[in-house]
Each structure stands twice: as structure tokens, then as C-alpha cells.
Image 1 (cartoon, rainbow, N blue to C red):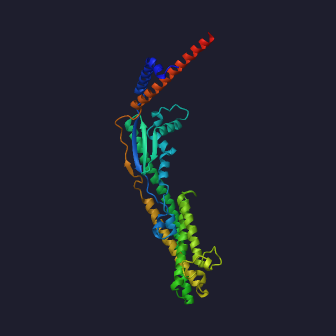
Image 2: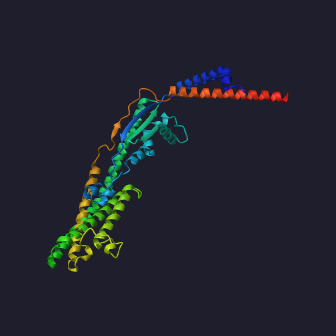
Image 3: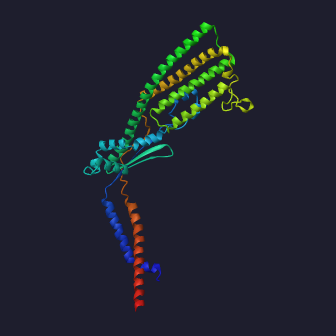
Length: 384
């Protein structure tokens, strides 16, 4: 069979003609395609660590299992991306810029659905490793592309602020009710302790017993406050939310610690002794003399209610600040500006691809044609 290079050279005019035809066609099509302009707005991802702020401030992240378990992201980036890609966001933009008419789908069977699909095709939303969320929009007009990109950011800011204020209002009302209940419980506990001491002439315990009682009461109050915080978060979060999971884990850990304080050893090892885990306190609550049990119980109740009250008040103040905070929640890194030159179609890229493809296709056609010619010639020779 003849050399491939010789075949291509012999049919060079055909290959060249096909190349020129494809390039001219591509250039003409590109010339008459509608111009699309690109505009990009970028924002910073929200800071991490929203959940449990009041509890963290009161307990201290380094000193409490609750503070340690509450560290981490609250899914703020996912929340931003979810709002930006939501159907509600798309519908707002479609109505604001009359995109049903702009995209020419007003006479379709489902104009809003088709407009959403077109807007999704003309939009790209990405989050980078550096913590920047970019919103790219393409449109047939440079100013329209920039306006839509900026509207994404403005609508995100408005919706996120509204959601934060709404959550803050729900949490505030719930916490106000709990603070009212705890205030009454604290007053009752103080009155009972005062009355018992006056009637029995009992004095407040000192030393290790008092320290053990107050430490257990403080931890018990932290458990109750954490349970309140869990109920607060569950009003707007699912069971798979990271803050919900961390709070449940911290509550379990504090309950185990409370049992160790009460029994003086790991409650899972009922025999104690060398095999049991040592208590954090030298005076287990179960070893307090019977004569002081009533006083210790009342002291523990007062201290527990004080702890709960302090935690709930800090949570309540935090929620009030959140509800009252109407400053922009989105940090804008770059606002979109109208592009000076269209981004699509890309004439040079289209011509480069068309040139390469035309050469490959042209050579393939020549080789296939030559192979067919040779086969036919051999067939005629064999028949003859």
C-alpha cells in the first residue's frame, strides 16, 4: 500500500480546501452568534463557630468538655451556597430582571421553569479553598450581567440577615421563658435553704465537702443549661446538624463526670478499689454524713439554679444581640463591574479547535477514500 504521506500529499488540495471551508464556516458562525458578557462578584465565607457561643464564653473552651466539643464550623458556607442556588433566589432574580422575556421563553409551556434552567446555565457559583465564594453571571448585555451578579450578593445578604433575626427572635422568646422559670426556682431554693438553716440552726459546710457539693451542683447546672441550648438549636436545626451532635456528646460526657463525682469512682466499675477510676474529688458526695444531707441537698439545689441562671442569661443576651444586629452579614470582597469585552463566543478558541478538527477529519476522509479505491481495484482484478 502506498505511503500515508504520499496519499495526503496527492490529495493536498482536498485537505486544504476542507480546512479553509471549515475555518470560514466557523468564523462566520462565530461572527453572528450573540455576544455574552461575563461579570463576577465575590464574597468571603462566613466565620466559623456560631453554635453555643454563650456556653463557650461562660465555660471556657479549654476548661470544659462542652467548650471543646462545641468548636468547629456551623455550616455557614453550605448555608450561603444553599441560599445562592435556591429556587427562591432564582425566582426573585427572574422577576426583578424580567428574565422570562429576556430569555424569550414567555410563550413556552412552563416559562418560569425554562427561565430557571437558562439562568442556571448562565450562572456559576463556586467556593474556593481560600474561603472565597464567587458568583459568575453571563448575559447578552455587560451591565445586566454585572447587575444580576450584584443582586445575588444583595439578596443573599438580605435573606441571611432575615433568617438570623428570625432565629434570634425564636431563641430569645424560648430563653426568656426558661429564665423566668429558673428565676422562680432559684428564689424558692434560696428560701428553702434559709428557712431550713433558721429552723435547724445548721451551718454551711466547709472544706472538701462544700467544694464537692458546689462542684457537682455547678456541673449539674451546666448539664441543664446545655440541654436548654440543645432545645434552642433544635428549633431550627436537624438531628444531623454538627452543633446538635456536639451538644449531645458534651451532655453525655458531663453526665458521666457527674456520676464519677457522686460515687467517687467510675460508675461502670461497681466494685471500685484499684480497678475503679479515681474521682476528681477526694470526698465523694455519697460519703457525706447523714446529718448534713439535707443541708447539702439544699446548697446543691441553690448552686445548680445559680449556674443555670447565669448560663441562660448569657445565652439570652447573645440572642438579643443577634436579633438586634441588622448590619450586613455578607462580607463583599469584589462587586461585579460591566465587562469591557465579551467573553463568549471565543473566536480564536473556536478557530483553533475548528482548524485542528478539520485537518484530522480531512486526512481521515482522504485515507478512507483511498482505501475504498484500492479495495475496489483489487476486487476488479480478482474478478478479471
